[in-house]
Image 1 (cartoon, rainbow, N blue to C red):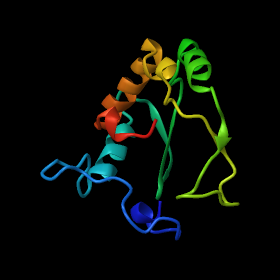
Image 2 (image 1 turned 90 degrees about the vertical axis):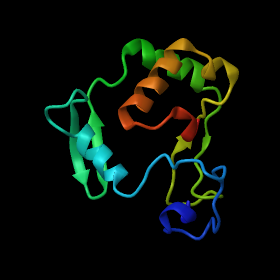
Image 3 (image 1 turned 60 degrees about the vertical axis):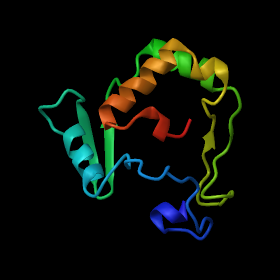
Image 4 (image 1 turned 90 degrees about the horizontal axis):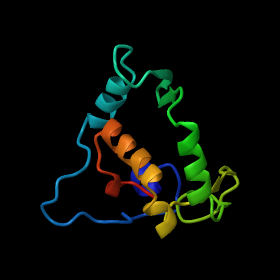
Length: 130
């Protein structure tokens, strides 16, 4: 959204606010440090760097066949046109299906994937979109 990246004119104010005194999930330099850690050849993630400006990492075998099936089964309930900011734009042509229903949110396999992502990036999954 524009508030975050200042690229488009769709959103001109923050969409959510932290409670007073709450610690931000990321501070200055944290995002770059996270990508450097994840792309370390000696690290456990085995990520390949496709670009470092902007950061794009590729993870071989990140999901097992069972995890892929669970995500498609539980999260693939309603694909809709992806939004850019607050609306549809011709530059974004993908479709999205959110894991925002009980069957997806409470699935143990999906929960495991969410936790693995959270552990990798060092940010609690409650700070993510569905």
